[in-house]
Image (tube, rainbow, N blue to C red; front, top):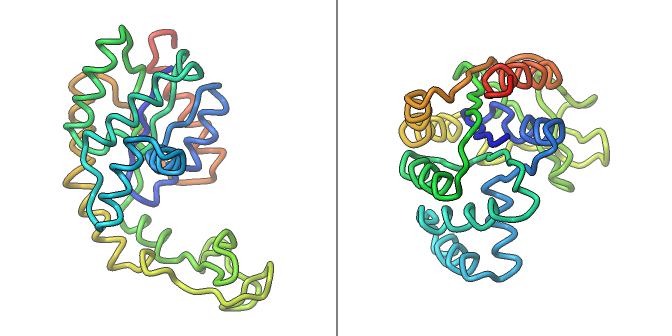
Length: 220
């Protein structure tokens, strides 16, 4: 299967992408991983991306598209892939359409994870991260530490990251609505979009997603 995963920040795309890719036995291709891999390997696209990022600028579409095309061309993606974070706007979606057509391929579905905006803010703004180890993350509502402000794992101080504040989250949502959300309409016109609620436990959302994708696919 060839799938695009979309949804606002805080929808749990990364978590769901990992579970879905494992269940479907296809590679999970995320924009973040593409950037990290190309930069660490010193590829030409990686050098271009790093130059823009170091200057505090967004990486241009053509660089991101080039990385995605290269990754989708790898042997492990011959039987399909799950795209997470790409395409992020309509021009990237059009480039993906053109590449797939040229390769004699097509998307099987676009999975839209739906979460109310207030829930997104609650999920992200409630995060608290350990200063000693950023992998130790708690949530004031969903997974609070035993002692307020103290990491259960190492005793380090818990703090709210700058990009987890409500103001920052709402700005990220504005960008999502203006730049990324339009790709949903782009794919709806192709009859590819399946929308599911991303509320509930992780395994419940995964099961919901698998059922929706199965129904939407030609084989389903």
